[in-house]
Length: 315
Image (cartoon, rainbow, N blue to C red; front, side, top):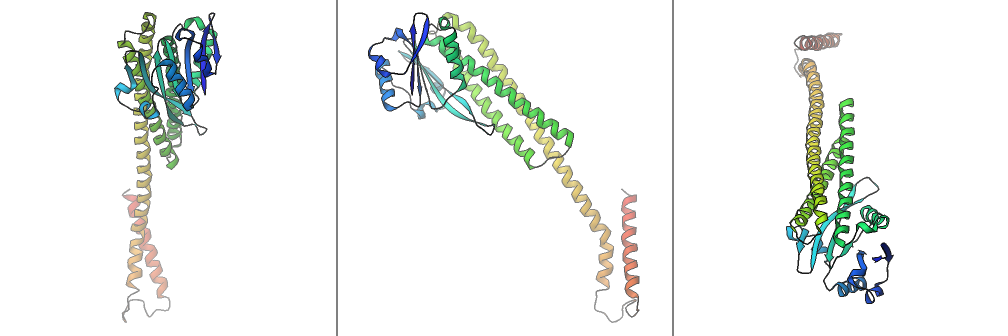
């Protein structure tokens, strides 16, 4: 699907017909948004903009040059966005940004709240977005705000889990699984925030962006750095929580081992007596007594009780 945002009389008009490229120029278009585009739509945009759109494999590359690069006619930037899932988790989808001739071209394969929010801002205040450069910065601002929400959400989950473990003093498999899941989420968020940092660093070094954008970049870099610090703190807290959980599990195992050890010590004399009277010798004490088994049982009970009292005395 393609959405073309046209500049008309200080307002933005949305269109979805690729035939408009035959009638319009670069100055008439602000944004071309490609959502899971067809081959025909990709070819139409490439012919109109006179450039090649990136493939999914090129967008997903991790080299620094793939995150932000400039050519003679265009600026290329690639990053990852999060897609929320019904189970509360999220997946990562790559997004490509290209700015050429003042037109922003975005290529993606999933719906994002960030793009919907950016489109709303564009409709509400079209004058603030004179070029695709301004729109790109606005989308990144919205994405950084969304990243901040994710970091805060993970921090709340960590605090809730920590409180549960502290109050109950018990840890089960579910708690360990939640800790591991939160660690994975935190690492993924931190990695993608680094992506944003690399893109902003590339933009700051560029000389193509309008001058009024650079003060906004400084604020965005400050926000990104604070998010990285917050994510690092969350990861350290999860490490501490994991150590606490493993420590509680070890204490529970030690208590269980202590009980088993005490039981084996208490019944060891009884086992010894039973073993002796289980021997097949003719001359055994009390063997010919009618009530010899009662004496043996009393002896077993006395030895077991004495061992228990001895263990209790020495703690």
